[in-house]
Amino acid sequence: MSRQLISVAAAFLMLSAAPALAEVKSATPGGFEVGGTVAISAPPARLWAVLTAPDAWWSRDHRWFKASTLSLDLSPGGCWCERAADGRVSRHLETALVEPGSKLVLRGGLGPLQGQGASGGLTFEIKAEGEGSLLTWAYIVGGYTPGGLEAWAAPVDGVLSAQLANLKARVEAD
Image (cartoon, rainbow, N blue to C red; front, side, top):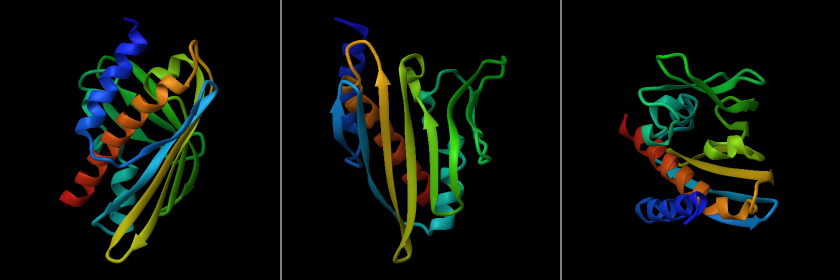
């Protein structure tokens, strides 16, 4: 069984445990789009504050290094970086667009996509809804990887869905 197939199977198992927050909108050999909408019982300012502090909500199980920290520099070209105490570092994404409190666009390849000929745009949009917020997100990835990118769509959707469930829980906890 190939490593990629094992990863896909593991992601499907995670999908069954994660709330249905997203969907694979399309998947082809050349790319995929995943995304969805999450209702959050907190005002947009609170959601923005937590969204832009990824160390507070991104799972430790989906980081490259144990005991690492995540940071996000909101300057153009700023780094969504992971740093380990021993000096190891990874640039997961970089900041492309910031509209404080309402829109964040990041560019890059998450996780194993870093080592592939693939990159994408991860967009978060926040709108007030009643006394809460509506977070709409999309990750659109294109490029080349042996065997095609369509096999990555469901696992990436599963991981991002789980992370957004973490975000929702963190925002609503305070």
